[in-house]
Image (cartoon, each protein chain N blue to C red):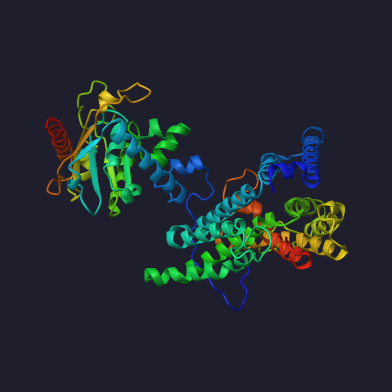
Length: 317
Length: 245
């Protein structure tokens, strides 16, 4: 991944056109709703406006090349974890949060460097990347011992481990994907399809959502929205087949299932956390979306599953 | 919410008090929630400022040994320019930096975004309402000093001098420390007025000398208006005496 390669890549340019087209179409649709049909679109408008800023940033970081993309993703993971730490109160413990930040930096480094002995092809130290939770959990568990503390340590350690595994390492799989031979297709598809899945769940829920899906966790989610989004996500791999021309029918089906189910699970996981704590949003960084974690939550589930699926069938590099 | 039978585990979460606030709101509130990024920026800025003061202003600091090693205390200093605060901060050991709170005028530093960023992030200022809310502001100072290890920096003149001469001390500092065993450390900065007088955009390369005096305590005095005035006058004398040397 380099700026030159991105500009020459048919896949990158096609996605740039698709996203630009979707944003223009969505803007027009909202304008029609707002000014011609006189409907109230306040919150959706805010969400849309934030997309106008986020979409160029995503394309910019992919255009910037492998190193830029991995650094940006690690920053996002760091911000996401910071929101989690502030929401749970873990941020008051500098040792544990510091250990998780070190873990996130380690995720970035294993994504960037090739394996020292050179037995793996290409960039990214896959073996260590996959083994990182062992070292991170060991480091986190060491902290109460090093500080000779007991009270409340199980909660702190558990929160830190969830923070690293979920926001650091699982989300970090998206960064590792930048090392794949088909990086542009994989990355752009996973990000685009996951966000479409989110939008589809919202729209289908509005249109034919009746029965609540998981009433205790997320009262607004309905069976209609969930199944509608799954249907959209199952069709999408066939429509955007140019992203991974080597995929057969089985892989396309798995891709649809991973995005359709995983995307919504990721959303629900963060909802469980928020509901248990008793807060509405993880932060206030992105107008109309909440915090960074509220935006990347679906990707956290999809990225690792997709990476290991593609790696199992074709090898990553 | 419905309670399910079986295993029930309730953890105690303490979300940040400023969770749903924007960055500006978070910087404006006091006490501010601790933030690793802010601490990192503040430490880096402190290193740069210390270098700048050393090189550009040939800053000399004498009497560092007079600073109490532990517990909370108050520093009072003459107010000739914005450099005063930076020089007092430069006299503090770096690891203590985030527990040093210079009182800054709420109406000047906590309104516009650039000044807010400097006051809250770089200086770690405590917003002090000098026209209204003086009582609440003093209460804020009191609760800050109740936590051991905090340092409050006050400029009892209340505003920067326009002539270079030391102005009257307001009685607020007196009422804050009367009848308590809080040490008050008088400080004097020489050269600040020549280096950066009011109304100038940028400091000029003049020499600065910060003198730190012996701490005083007013535990024996009753907490009333009379002793507040006496303490303020006594501290003014102490600061003026440091400037005479």
